[in-house]
Image 1 (tube, protein in one colour):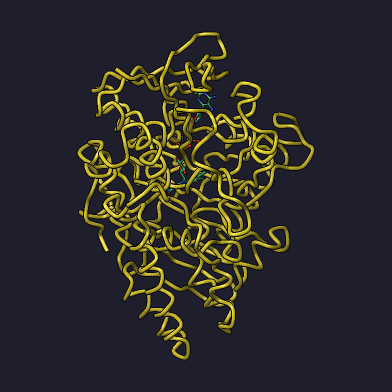
Image 2: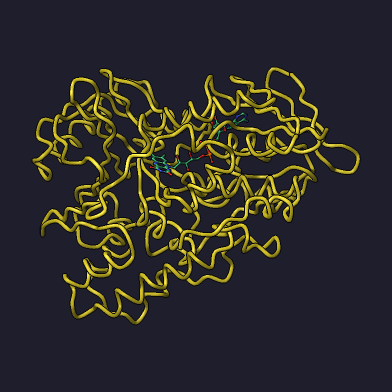
Length: 482
Ligand SMILES: Cc1cc2nc3c(=O)[nH]c(=O)nc-3n(C[C@H](O)[C@H](O)[C@H](O)COP(=O)(O)OP(=O)(O)OC[C@H]3O[C@@H](n4cnc5c(N)ncnc54)[C@H](O)[C@@H]3O)c2cc1C
């Protein structure tokens, strides 16, 4: 029986472990943290589940892409989905000029935006239909469409190029492209095909999960418990061994425990690979490339509670300017944009709210010092005040906790603390899904795309290389939801 070591027990590693166990591989899953999915599971304050790395996802209807991926490894039966509002899935509050509610579905979005911008209705309609078509044509959504191991988005143009020559009002462009905030790449730097995956999936059959990210991580744990997978928590992979032919032979933990294997799937941050792999396993140019990868921005998060049900069934963005591209280019100028999402109410009727903003760690101030604490407290108070000023519906907001880049780095056992790992943008090279070490594969949010869907797809691609693409994708073949 072939042995596989999966490094990292986040969404990608857990999915890989479940999938390979299903095919009879002997799997060992090594997770550096004390529990699985540290990014997803969140934490509890005042009896409320505060969600960190999972709030909502789309294509969660029968036949939808994420629904199919969950179903394939048996997770579907362990989860209860909470539908987001169809009429207003995301509320965009422009601080100077009122609200726009973004509905779900292609035609409703076209109609809603065309009512506001009648002169541009053809541009609006063309844009969203082009997104649907790009989504439909992405082999990754429906493995049945994969004819060879061609998984990238090489031939896509950028979103900026798409808008070239279209003289659209800045606010309309923002309304069409705000979906990019869900994967941490400013619209001006998005690749159209990648943007289409996110924009489509965050506009169709969007749901939260009852119990939030904690329920998801528990569902993973439960399903894993039904397999023979050896789960090792608090076990950080420190080195990968290779044999005479350059093939992977074992993973050694930082404590020196050795896990022999025929394959290894690594789901941590790619920048750690040069330290993990034997000297000489990577060409100098590849080592250089891996250490210089561009990161997505880092987030500051405030966790709070409210009695108001205003955010139930939708997320909200407080847009402090009309132009998202400009806000991304100059994040320090003016008030930050805020993203808000809401979880399940606790027994006493309070709802947990997570507010995130794009914010760097305070430069030069080490975590844990007085200065750092003062910075964190000030930013927390300023963020709460900004929410209440622009969204008086949440005027009773009570802060429960906050998290900076330092916490983010801890959740992913990385040194960087970027929100969504490596930035997948039009002007930076994608991370290569295959390494030069035979049998050593990469998966996770830094490889393909962040989000549950992106990480599950990347896991399926890595596992396909082990199980055999034809076999795996024939088994996985399903009709896409489009
Ligand atoms: C604030 C925030 C909100 C988000 N909201 C959503 C959302 O609403 N919906 C959605 O779909 N997605 C959301 N995402 C994105 C989603 O959470 C991530 O893309 C996804 O969870 C990443 O999974 P992963 O397995 O690729 O990476 P990770 O979760 O980072 O998993 C990698 C794991 O590897 C472990 N590890 C690293 N190195 C080693 C080593 N050497 N040895 C052993 N273990 C190691 C780490 O501890 C970690 O657990 C959000 C992300 C953030 C930050």
